[in-house]
Image 1 (cartoon, one colour):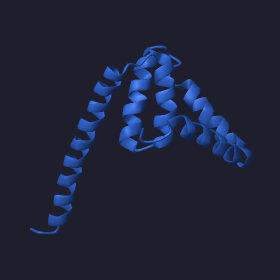
Image 2 (spheres, rainbow, N blue to C red; image 1 turned 90 degrees about the horizontal axis):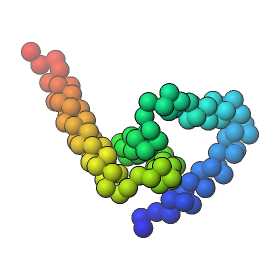
Image 3 (cartoon, one colour; image 1 turned 120 degrees about the vertical axis):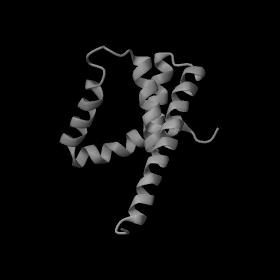
Image 4 (cartoon, one colour; image 1 turned 90 degrees about the vertical axis):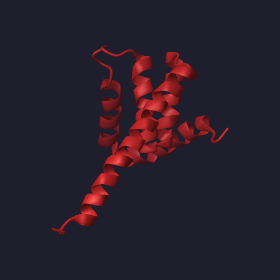
Amino acid sequence: MLQNWTETLANNRKAGEALGKHNPQLLTAFRALNQAQGATGTLDAKTRELIALAVAVTTRCDGCIAAHADAARKAGVTEAELSEALATAIALNAGAAYVYSLRAMDALSAGQA
């Protein structure tokens, strides 16, 4: 195991208490945002968690991975389903690197007529 994800999730929740103590409105708004996602019922919980994990990987958020892996497990996500979602995240990151490489090339040549 690369990391103790259960511990990461618990540590983040405990650390969040201090932030909530000093910024209760921020914490309330953050919780409301998380509760609001999926409120329409258009996507099922499994699909939302697969998307959340793919986004968590692309944004490199360990806390997000811990929280959404826990929720994905509860929603019944399989390793095969997660693997396919993560393949999309990997491809997207490669695509983003390609597009930003084009931007870097453009920036280097800027001003050269």
